[in-house]
Image 1: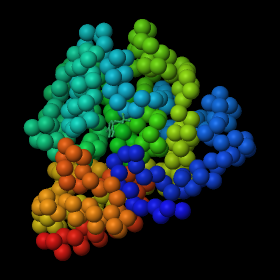
Image 2: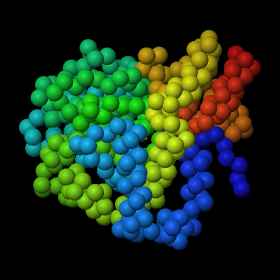
Image 3: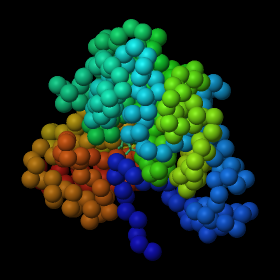
Length: 364
Ligand SMILES: Cc1ncc(COP(=O)(O)O)c(C=O)c1O
């Protein structure tokens, strides 16, 4: 079998090894069925059990109150950028607040503009998106249809320590790259969504958690597959769902509950991993330069530059030779980025830390 490396990709990203092993073991025949998960009907009892367990696990992990629905949708997080304003903004005569603190919230803002009136409550672009806003900096319009944020900007590596206060407007959060990485207080959100391919599973499914009163706002004239109310009534089974991706979400959430011990434990582990890297950056006398201001540093994505760009290529090459892969930064930020999602073992981060120290000593 091909040897596995440490995969620091921003997504699709590393999955927990026990999850891959279980999926591999059961790939030919799911226990009790004799049928592969790749062959099973989404209307079967066995799949019903899988999707219900995935939802139950998410409800337990995140403490999701009963007045929220959990939907398993397709189209990635990007489709949510359009569906949110289609369902909650278009035709309301209201504005939506958008906090623009990185590439993904900017994209969400641009999509929303096609559907209604959008108000930029804060724009981090002049700061090169190196931090999230302070509460006092937010310029929120009153009586907004909703307030939109991105809890973790995957490309710039900035993350909120706590959610902003959106006043009376429902807070909507793109949590794609820090979903299930720490506990959240769901009651503070009207809606929270995440594509699965970073922390929850493979590409193909997007998880939407939405309060009933927001679901009830969906206009009746929207096509069914972009209408939250119709999707919720259909219990995510309006058409054929991404069965395999949902099955892996079930296994990942089983792993979080049974092997990690919940989101408090996961958050603590994630913090320890991130600190290993920020510590090297801070002690390198400028050899490595982090992108984010310390108070906004992400526990999931650590973008950094080497002060001398000529070091980029040998750094990436030598890292890959040690099995530390996918460390190239996003083209818009440059340099390097280590994505250290839930499933990245601390041993991988320790190896990267050791390599960074050694590379700095040799090349300083
Ligand atoms: C924070 C965030 N939002 C949205 C997306 C887009 O997700 P998708 O490719 O599933 O549409 C990404 C993808 O990297 C992301 O990191």
